[in-house]
Image 1 (cartoon, each protein chain N blue to C red):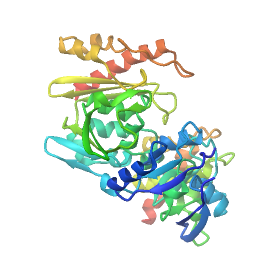
Image 2 (cartoon, rainbow over the protein chains, first blue to last red):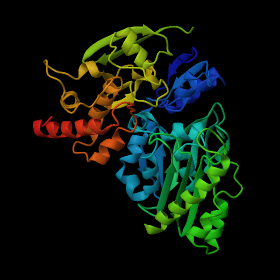
Image 3 (spheres, chains in turn cyan, orange):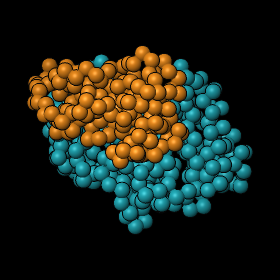
Image 4 (cartoon, helix red, strand yellow):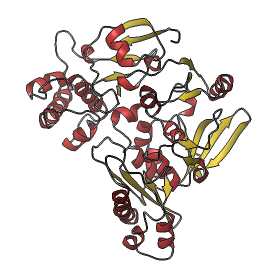
Length: 275
Length: 161
């Protein structure tokens, strides 16, 4: 399988990438690691006429302690997240989730920004960042703006990014090394989650997000509310599928996904409260 | 068709420079332009790992990377592992432990194992099984592959490589 023909240009910096996309217009696509975009292009589900390769913009690859939050450059690879001591201490949940993305080969190439910008509800990192109340830094022709995670994921593979904007940084709260649970259910180790659940304790409250339970990553608000009202984890977990309309496919019916969500949220909450 | 571009990289220590369309995948570049057919195309969907090569020392699936993304990089394929007429310890271990049957996954499996042992020189069996989750083998049931990688780790530790 070979992608449809395209013109290839390489950006040396974030500013150059934004200038290039302004020049080439809506049919241009940014290419980071390519772990989401290239499979779509090979299936011809995506047919950009211009590919702007931002994979070499090294100044967007960093994990930095920025005082009240941790700043992660959009082109930081999953491999760099899963081996980061700083993340291990300051935001262990992000490190642990990154370690479960795809397989070694995918984590050597794939980037956090690419995963977020792709906005796949079956991907692990968007749901984790939603649970963490992350903030995304976006650069466009008019300068930078900040977008909260809960405003970012708009629909299936649809985000708040305008076609001429580049995601440059992800900011997450400091949640410490523990206090989280991540549960991912799939049939083969490397696959996307059939359903996944992230629970993260932040300043005394517990945030819960779901993978692959709808067209976007979702917060399990009913679970969070039940916990806030004093329900125990097992009781709260029964609310996990409340309000969701999960997809049905070869792997699972919507009903089975709703069952999985309850089981996995229950396990994630148990782990989050264990440490 | 978009215009061909000049793409160059070091493959197994030798300079390669070829004209290729931007949409050329790394695996096509290696097989068709460089003539190195040891790297296999299996699923072509980034699942099976048969096309695994090393780019700057790390395992990647070459069916899901543009050759243009590897422009200027150092690439190692299965043909580049043996040195001075001697198999690489991972190749030797796959031979001795019979870590293959039909052989189609083997090149990718060996390359993934080389990268894994670079990152985890003294792996547990679990490390090996998890580290090779990106490579599918439909013959062996993985048992001998895991034994081979564990044996290779011991050899590499002993030789100081």
